[in-house]
Length: 84
Image 1 (cartoon, helix red, strand yellow):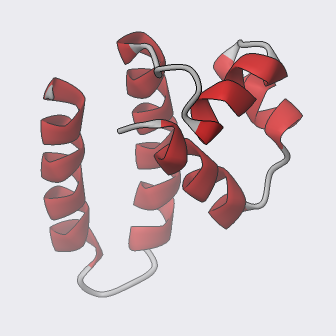
Image 2 (cartoon, rainbow, N blue to C red):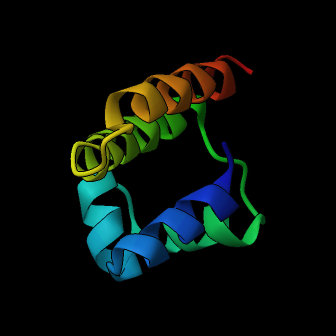
């Protein structure tokens, strides 16, 4: 997971950078730097973002018949991404 993933997710769920920064507990300038690749995303922040993403994805997947199976696949991949 890198800053581009944060930007994509933030844009998908429709929140502004300063709101996302508050959710993550970071300065909006740091989030901007992560999103544009000029600053490496700290592992701890990557984990926090992944957890937020998992919560939102879980809620969406509950609305589709194959939801829990898709959730399990997504979660497995998210854990692999965090471990890298």
